[in-house]
Length: 170
Length: 335
Image 1 (cartoon, each protein chain N blue to C red):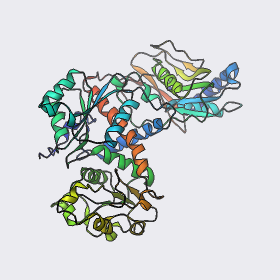
Image 2 (cartoon, one colour; image 1 turned 90 degrees about the vertical axis):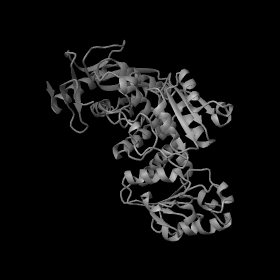
Image 3 (cartoon, rainbow over the protein chains, first blue to last red; image 1 turned 135 degrees about the vertical axis):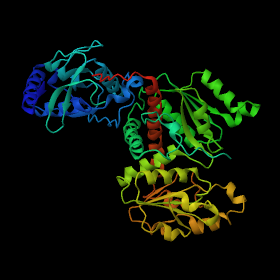
């Protein structure tokens, strides 16, 4: 399975209109993309909103609960949140939602910057296999994949995605 | 005095990850760059309202200081605390060993307290290597300065500082000035600069403060400060250890300052945008004039800030390397 830039664009447009139907999006403080795929999606999604929001980026790698299993990822990027998190209405954005652990780590990190009033979640792909009670408010496409497969997004300039067997990459 | 074994293999896992950090010698350029890149993320954490990440939560870090230190010990302590580890700092110079306990017995006792990492400073060269070979598997050892041998985290924070201000190491000329003979900092800096690809490393010192095999240091040797500092991008001053004054190595502090002390006048021979570094503590009017130490080109205090982030990077990488030793090799993308 493969999604070319036009197909990704269609998913992003659907997500943008779904986000605009959420009442929280009106007056939201900002979009927060999770490095690195989520950051690409957040940026692309923001360009498709009728009223673009301030854009922030998080690298949740210092907050992961599986550090002992996975070790430290190379070159963790600095988190950049150009707005006050305290009392903010935030939309967290990631490329792929699976176990939910990345989202938990990202929320923990957000709380170190302040106490947000609300957090919504938008993801490009939801591939199931959740291990935590976390769900997306807005999702581009829901997939059902065998355990040994993942979706990999490539970017940032031309966003494309494909299903890959586990064991590639990291 | 025993010298460290030339092999640094004990520092790495079979697949090349850091598991101890004892010396920069023999480490690869990608690994050193990895340390600097990881540190960049931690510099960001240091600027936040909550300067803490949960990476080493539940881990116990023991600072073993057989030789006294204020800055290195306190920055290691802060680094461990900002990683959420529990920290125990032992000033061994004043504790059990003075009651006759051997180093190995002290280690075994600390291991029995389930320590995950030892940060070791020792007056004997090679002591952290010995400890790394003796500790039980899965305990990481970080060298916080051993004898005249190495001070790798200081060297890496200096590399971070240089990269921060100069953007990289290509084409850079770096001068290290002062007591090269007794300086573990200089030795580690020279190794790191050569590995990272600096164009030229110079050492500037009187003959009496240069090792006999100065030519083997991997640096160009100068005894004249003005010649040595000509056209450099970075000037690193070393602390002149006053206790050396009593030995016959130096005429007087005043004489040393006249010949090798960094003043604005001497700094005028370096590149106009040269930066001035010093590992601290500084001796004003001995190796560096106040006008330079407090001047616009001094990045001495920034080094301290970066030092915490670099130590956080090394500590988390070493713990991560230890964990990977027996971790299942399953891929776990974990979205």
